[in-house]
Image 1 (tube, helix red, strand yellow):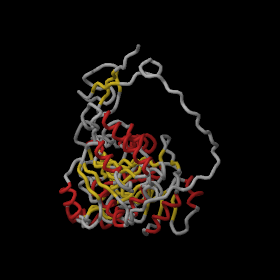
Image 2 (cartoon, rainbow, N blue to C red):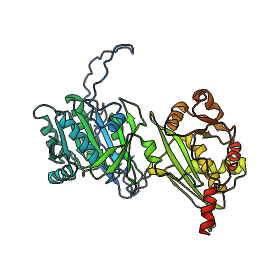
Image 3 (cartoon, rainbow, N blue to C red):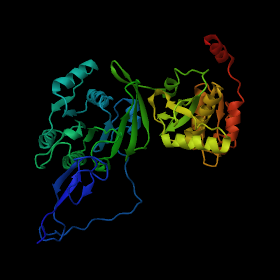
Image 4 (tube, rainbow, N blue to C red):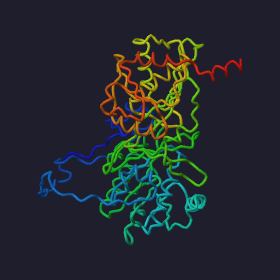
Length: 470
């Protein structure tokens, strides 16, 4: 008779190995391998396989009602979740410590509670008194939110099962939840798997929306195995830099709405405030007379967003030039520099290159290539770009410019903020429909874009300022 076997699981990434090793081959973590028991395989004789029941097979065509939504009244949060929370869904929210996850969830729960919904906030990291102090600081003490400080999974589920099922339950955080049936420490792979499965099962059977807050690693990923992300219905990341007042809530998975949608918040004394016009806020402190700055018209989910790309090219005093990137892909910057050197003769190998996306936003789409290239050439030549100009488009390895999607939406957002000129690839003309409110410039290749940037003479105001300080 076959016996139940044991496997060794990495508690950091969830990788499985047949034997214990000191270092995980998958994530490189030391002393993270822990032995876990596994059930015997089907047909081994340990547990007889029961006969299954026949299930009904249906076709794709049919009527399916639209799932109801629980609107919080926080427009940015409702946008990211696809129009509100869906009853019976499980949502995982991750972010750096102190970024504002608990504050956002507490504000959302208070909004729902004031509308008469039964909501529960279970804290595994803070005492009830600490949660009350935060609510008092945010002005939410009068909201009828039910609080509890508990980490035992069985006690939490027993409490939630008493009386009418709550509409929303927040677990802060899922890494602190533990089950007494599993012999491992809280936060381990086994505990995370068991806790997430039990919470998701409760959400599906009771129709309760479960909000699970999770820690993130130094790489920005939710701590623990990725299997938690596969089990839930939506995964939201709360991004931002403590040095900036802006916070970005980004959806990377959503079974009931679009992915890559973002919500923009501003950290204030009274908590997180919504930002209704993120483009105007990101461009509010822009210096229009400085070389090396370009305005990129991007798309985040369904929202057009204008941000400033800042670059600085300076002679390097080291043997190897430095490349520092904040808010963009470093590999994408290396590719742009290589194309500028090969096809345009703009060699920056002996220069330090610094790139920053203003406001703490992280740009993920390749449509920022043209804006980055124009900003690099502007900083290298000392020619500032026109202040009323926006740029978007992708650069290929051959030096040609490729169009990107939703060009008309990008130009409408730029025109709304007072921009008068746009630099786009030639292929985008059919989509933007030659918007009459803006002057469209369409360089055919990257070298034409470089010549266009070099055609602007240095601003007289900048020249006078430099002369006065020299």
